[in-house]
Length: 630
Image (cartoon, rainbow, N blue to C red):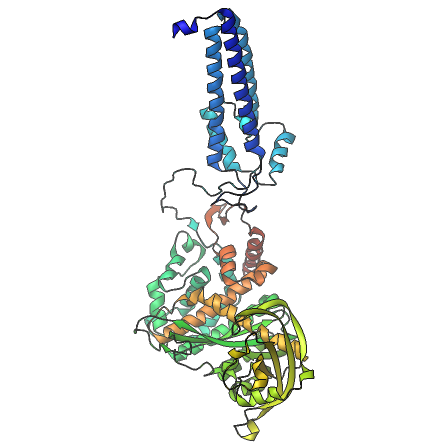
């Protein structure tokens, strides 16, 4: 090796120059790579990475670590270059080069210090931050500061410390190892429950329970504390008796008094009889009326037009220990929950009445009484204008129509396609059909396809002619028809005239024009959303084996739903029509730390909470009300 290295001085000089060019080229390429990595925006994300601008906003810590260690390679190449100069050049010529190198390193170090410690002159730093469109990451900056302290002689400024976020990078990574302890008594996970239950107190929930509910024995004692606890647990997300234990975690005892154990609340529910459930129905009715009085937007426009939608659902149960379970119309074993919702064209639905029935009950069983009670509740809540009762074909009977008329309401009920209705449709002249187009395509389950147009016609019709003449009802039969793609799929028994179309008939005495009345009836599907919200929340289970306990649970679920809806209306216009799960996630299940400053309790909530303004609107309303009451 020594013989190989002992070549002429000119040859040594050539080798050194070549090495200098190679090293210089490597450093140049490295710097360009750093700049490209910092500023380039890839055209397509890699698998498993997000391009969502709301998600891919922070440069990942792993990427930062690579950018930190990248300059280390720069220093290593620089060291090799220095060693080469020392080996093949006159040592006397080296100090000048070393001085220039140290001066360059000192300059880089100064710029790095000013950037990382954020004392750099404002406009430059702000430009870098603004170029990322508000996605500046304080956690990433702290990471760079820590790495700077560890490698204080590495020129991190070349790594693009404040480069904007690039799409296509992994964004959810655990950057450190952590330990976890459940040891903080001042934390709560449902800070939004405080203003919601303040709203319930303002609406008189505690007083209503104390005045109306008379459950006997030790299990029924202090019902004015137990029923609100049940409702509060459901508002917070509990869907079983055991889940009510979430009311007792962390600092909840500082926010609420009179909290009870889940076992105590379960014992209270099992002490109910049918009469006690009816008393609880009265509490729920008056609570809705009080909420509507205190939150005007809850049933906005009810003094002009309101709709009462009636429907039922099977809540599946398992095992044979639950009382009242059976196989209903859906073929599922469970309990049947019937409910009536109140809505307006500008307000989302609230629950006006509920009834739990045995699983094998027919849909329309007891519907007349439920409608009568719901109409009374609706009027107490401010529905003084035109009310229309809407229902599907399962409720097409004389008793339901009579209950609506007796309560001073119109009716709009899907008619069953029996021979009398089929004959009435056959008599409609072809020229009477009016074409309509839907603003949005709707899915036809029977046809299994999306439809965007149909035809509508109407004909006078007298229903329930099998009953005595005094009980006949004459009104409008509004029919919508959609052409079948395959006429062979027409149900057996339909004549040839009806085979080419699928018909949907509505029996109504609505004062609206034909097309408006038909469109209004289709909005009956809003009740399905309420049922879905309940099944995704407190009605995920029927928690007890005792039928009356489950019936009381259903009534409490209705009160929790109405309170959640009222809270959403107060918070913002968007939350006023949002699903219950959305309101729960954004306004109620908000973590907070309880602190005491100057003998005043204060909640410290997360910074940058996306729905801070809506939460503050809700909290401010509850705080102002509490101050006024005090």
